[in-house]
Image 1 (cartoon, rainbow, N blue to C red):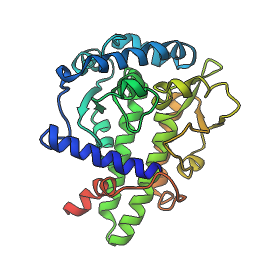
Image 2: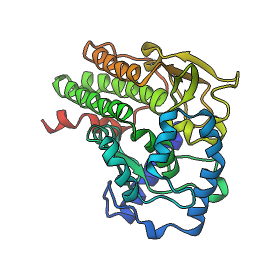
Image 3: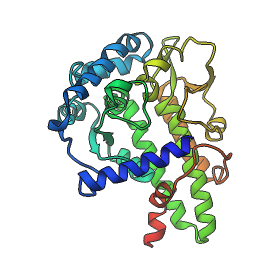
Image 4: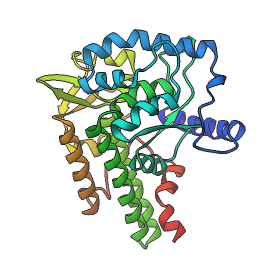
Length: 304
C-alpha cells in the first residue's frame, strides 16, 4: 500500500509539474492562487498543534518558530521565511512543484536549499497526508533549519549523497553498480526517516521531539514521548539502516540521539560505513527504491 501511494504521488506530481509549471522542478510560490480554504487549513493546523509543540518539541525548534515569525493565520510566503532564515543558518526554502528525486533533494541540502512543497492538504481532511505539504515542510522542517548545528547535519547528509554518487560512478560493473546504489539509497532513506523525520532527542534530561514528521502530526506528537505503544531506543546505526518502515500509519519504533553533535557524528559514521562497503547490502523491505531515485544517484556514471 505504501509503495502504491508513492507511485501515485510520483505520477500526480509529474502531471502537476508538466501542466502547471512548464516542467520546472523548482518554482516560485504562486501565492495568489491560495484559496480562503487553503489559508483556513493552515490556521486550523497551526492552532491545534501549537500547544503540543510547547509541551513536546525540542527547545531549538520552538526558538526557530519564534525566529521565523511564522504566521499562525495564513500560509507563509517563502520569501518572507528566507529573510529570517538566511542570516541564521544560510538555508533557504525553495519551492518545488512536486516530487524531487532523492539525489536532487540531498544535493539541494548540501547547498543549503530545502525543497519545499507549496501545496496544502484539504481543509476537510486535515489528518490525511498522502504526500508532504507546505505545513509539513514549513511548520515541521524549517524551524529546525534556523539552528546552525542542525542545519550542518543536513548539509553533511548532502555531502554523503555526493559521496554515494561518486562511488556509483567508480563501480565499473553495471549490475553491481545498480545493486550497491539501491542498497545505499535504502540505507540513506532509513537514516533520514528515523532522524530528520521521526527523531527524538534528549534535552536537559527530558525526551523531546525534533523530527519533522512528528512535529507536523497532531496525532502522533501527543503520544510519541509518553505512550507505551511506542518503542523508543537509543540510536544504533546498524539497526537504523536495516530497519524497514511504512508511511501509512503511526511509527511504532523511534530512535533517540543524545545531541545534535551526536547526530552529526552518526552521519560521519554512515559515510565511513559506506566507504568501507558495509552498506552494500542492507535488509530488504521498505522503502522500495523507485527508478527515478536510482537514476538520480547514477547520473555521474551515466554521464561518464
